Image (cartoon, rainbow, N blue to C red; front, side, top):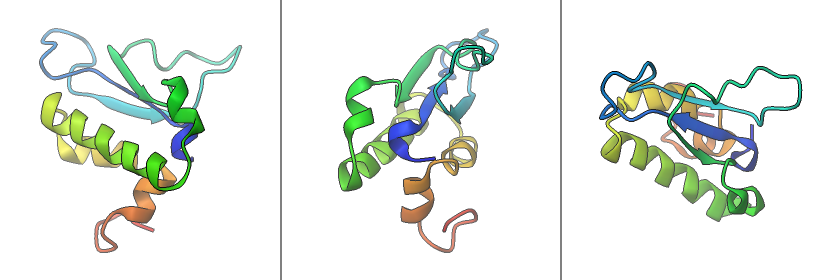
Length: 104
């Protein structure tokens, strides 16, 4: 899915006792009638932010990597966990080093 369509939901490892602490999920907007997959998480980014939905090209791709960095460095999400979910984002797969598993 494109970055402008991808919601990133996570809960910081610092939220001890929270049922989704240390977890991240990337997915689409929740449409009427869908299960609200976002609800268990404490924080949101990506397409959850209205201004992100308008970004295209390099700016949109840059924000994907800013989000990845924020989750790993500030929020304590394991890099492998974040990487596994961010592979769902086209721009991420296209721009990571080609020798990393999951790269396009």
